[in-house]
Length: 457
Image 1 (spheres, one colour):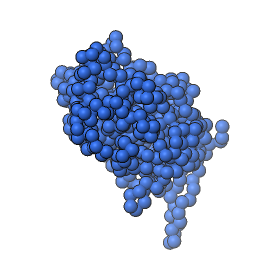
Image 2 (cartoon, one colour; image 1 turned 120 degrees about the vertical axis):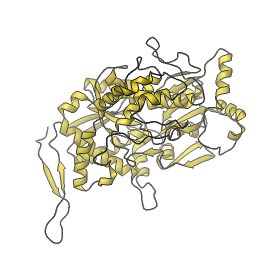
Image 3 (tube, helix red, strand yellow; image 1 turned 180 degrees about the vertical axis):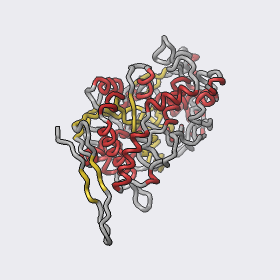
Image 4 (cartoon, helix red, strand yellow; image 1 turned 90 degrees about the vertical axis):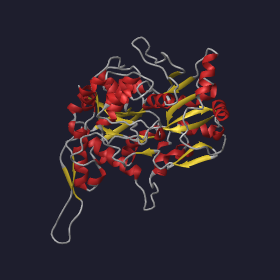
């Protein structure tokens, strides 16, 4: 372990009298760290912070280690095998409230927005086109709702079958997104109960867990007829000619939070300066990933794709990763579309740990029965504030502003309360207000409803 010290570096000198901006290297409690990740492109901020030297600039030596699945990743953080990890946004929340593995997990940093897609098999796509002839074109209108899928689901049920579909983990954004997409078309994705931890109860389909890199193989084998996953595993289906992405999560919920950087609460308490230093490095990595030239072209993404394509990181072909990471997305080989916001790593205040993001995940857990009992609105706020650490983020950002690495307008205003403005940017147009979780929960046709009086408690 190195001897810690405060290091100040002169960044600039004025012509008339000396002025300086100090780059401060914190006196970190722990400087050798292990971070886990799953082989998805949205692990990019952690990988880039290592490969571009942002961790090292903060006095940190970081090992970045691929994990086999989300459960093992979380378990390794809890046991201390890992110091922290690339996590599903729902994981810290679910662990903290005790759904699945129980442990108080916290996050000071959101890794990205958007980045997922829903892909169907070629056979299902052909049937969707038969049900909706407007889809039978090289460039159908987007977003594509699940309405043309419903007759296929209904026909399978009449034959005593439920179509099998995949998502990556019970508390993943992918699970909630494909459920949202299906339910918006009056397809019931199933409920979780105290005796049904698979979430099949009353479902019109069967939605089960598949690790992300295995998704294309399940489509090819027929184990799944559709799935929701992050990149590059939708683009892989297009490249292999085995499936068609029908929508992205940008169209299900515009600029939705996807992954976070998570650590245990105990680790955060023991290593406060280290956590700030890590957050500083991640903020710089996010900004590097979203950097553009004067025309708006992303200038660092091709380099990022080459780094991510390495076997020790995502390990998919560079060209497949590049499809979505450089501002485009292939829905079919004939349907390449500009999607500059398919992956967002910094802009739109993406990296800030917004309380309203946490509340949304809690509403989905309650909607689908993972939270088994009704809760008052105050509970949603309380849990979000236990998990999200904006004060850590603000300390890291203040140092970066002082150093000149970011500007004030690149983070929320000082009086921001952690709740984004209400939005109707969902595929069904229903408004979400993080300060009104009970009203939002009750606004959906399918799923749990709670007593409206709980909104005042």
